Image (cartoon, rainbow, N blue to C red; front, side, top):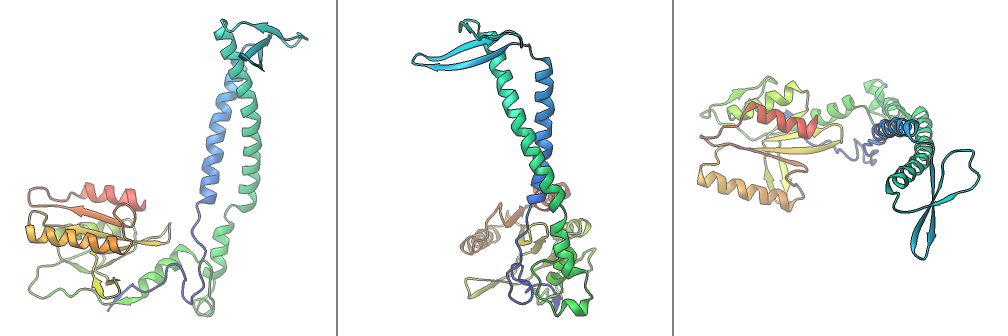
Length: 286
């Protein structure tokens, strides 16, 4: 028996649908920073802008433009469209003033939200995770800490695909055995980055068939599983045909390359590099 396998990522331990992971707080902070960047730019533009103001009036012939040269002017004066440079600066200035007010309003709203709600989602997780293990067993949580989530996922037992004694295998940094040097490199890279995974954990597909993905990996941030298939003998015709068939198995069961399925390949002429493994891990998990 190996640990891992049956913890329901969506319903936790006892059937209650858990809260979906959210990037609301992260996105709010990113939005605030982006708004602040534009705010500083527009403030600088307005400080350097000329005193003229341009007003636009609609007519049957299209837009008509009027100008005030300074604050003391009481009347707007018509300006010909030939003065394109003056009009452009005045229109841009008016635009910047209106947008700047709205940006400041949004920043204030975001600031209030972030101040009130920031880290509350973590506190919700802690209501469960700060309990003793004995107490946790009595609770059906709606959310839990990443540590608890990972531990629940890893502690479920599963029977991996058997490796016969006559096959050369390699021991990983996580003290398990894999079938190839490339799988060794993948496992060690995942372990180094503290990304939870299971090697050759059974996956039931089509309700009648069980396959063994090379790596079943927990995407902790998004609270979902991804699969990593390494195709190590793509210059072998029989092997490559089987690899294509395996992809079709995945597709029929809602597992898609670029979403929840990672594919790496190699041949004798083109081995899988450790830098390529790092790139795939960075794109998918970091």
